[in-house]
Amino acid sequence: MQEILWISMKKDSILAKISNFPHAPGVYFFFDANKNLIYVGKATSLRDRVKSYYIGKRSFRPIEMMMEKVADIKYQQTDSVLEAVILEANSIHDLQPRYNVMGKDDKSWNYIVITRDNYPQLQTLRQHDFVQLSKKQSGQKYLHVFGPFPGLNSRATLGILRRMFQVSRCTGEEKRACLYYQMGQCLGACVGEISPAGYKQKVIGPLVQFLKGNKKRLLKTLEKRMHKASQVHDFEEAARLRNQVFQLKKIHDVALLNKSFFENRGVGASGSMHRIEGYDISNLGATGKVGSMVVFEHGEPLTSGYRKFKIKTVEGQSDVDCLEEVLVRRLNHPEWKFPDVFLIDGGKPQVNRAKRVLQTFGIDTPIVGIAKGPARKKNEFTFSSPSKAFVHWVNEHQQVLVRVRDEAHRFAIKYQRSLRDLKKK
Image 1: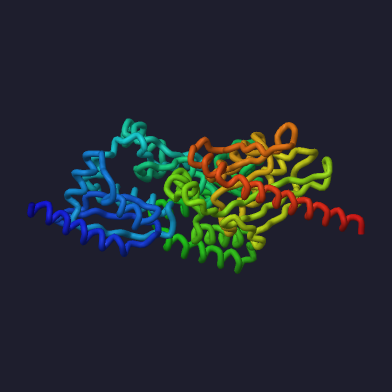
Image 2: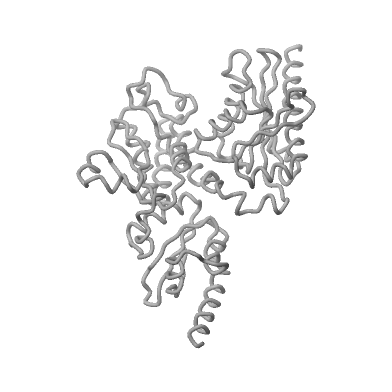
């Protein structure tokens, strides 16, 4: 009886402490009664995640054994989920907490590696494949190895890192510029615009510092380089560094959150509308092609977020190519707040193309398309995700989604007409 009472009192004191944890991303540390670190975990919301260990049933026996030993909990807040992922991995690697090491053979544990190529590549490696390499083999293949990372969303993580640091996928032996160079995400390894030495200094060096958890030091280095480039009138390089500094300060890692977005935030159940971006393409045959982006928050238009695009690269009539250009140009503006849902005026071809573009940027945000159907008398919805929760949410909010689609169409037509009127003058 006394033992049960002590456990209850300990739980109450820990819950009181947790109530002061922030609703922010970070890493939490579990300690036993001897002040030994026994577990490290990451969280998108420190308060909610740590509290969940004490609320509800736990069916996994090792977790129950661990929680019986927890006597104190500490945390370290981070600026983003991505930084929490990196801090967690570095903490596990350096401190070897008992209950993290016990689960180290889990298939969801991955490493982030940088290869020894002329233009080093950024890749992930599964725990199982990594442990099969000898130390010599690892050293021969990889310049740097980071991790392991528990439960890493590999594709989204690499997408974010490649975008922030302009990591090339090119070998330097290509015959023409790659798509990422045209999108401003490659410094020209494909066409020889940057040397291997320059690539390692401008791309790999900053990436390594970030993955080591040295973001503050990295920001100071980049800001010094930016001012130096400006002083010697290399304004293109200064602008690139300015944008990189901004992205590092405002990391958009919604892709790392999205997998559990609808389940954890109760979108369908709460009935609350979050942020939706709606897109439409309008054209007069093969000419006068424009695109629109409208924003709705909590079911109402937010006109300050509206954007219009005059199509620049697409020849002929192709709505999906125009949509791709619009999305690429939009996603090259990380300072614009990211939506919870992308809405496209169109069906499966448009949704598939939009999904491909978002994946290129490492973004998993759900996409819904609305087409008018063969007889153009009813709205047909297409989903980028088969998630039941997302489908349920769309079904519950069809009227608002149609409003977003119609507003995007209206805004595109208005822009197209204004351009046509200017030509007449």
